[in-house]
Length: 135
Image (cartoon, rainbow, N blue to C red):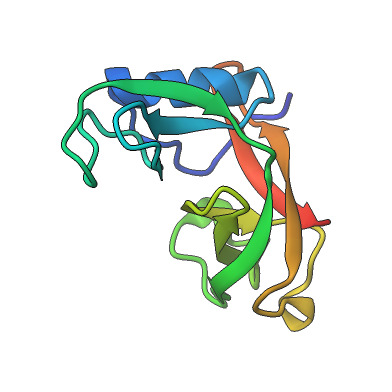
C-alpha cells in the first residue's frame, strides 16, 4: 500500500466504532432504539427524542446525490493531482445523509438524484474510507 498523503478523519471513542466497521467494508450507522431514527455522524444522544439507547445497523449502502461540490483547487497538497474531483452529500435509502467522495464519476457527469452505491478504499492499515460510485 502506497503512503497515504491526505488528511485522515479525527476520531473519538464513538466514531471509532463507525471506522472499525468501514475497515471491515461494512457501512453501519446508528439507529435510535427509542424512536427508530437513523443518524450519521455518530452521536451519544438522539437529536430527535433525546434517547441514549442506540444500535449500529448495517445499511444497504445505496442512495442518491442530494448535493455536490467540485473543488477545482487543492486545499491540501494531497489532493493536488486529483482536482477537479467530486464531494457529495449522499442521501442513503434509509433517509440519512452523509458526505463522501464520488469515484469513477467525472464532475461533468454528476447530477442531483443520481443513483449511487458505496465502495470502500483501504487507505491505511487503520482507515478504510467509504466512497460512492454510480449504481
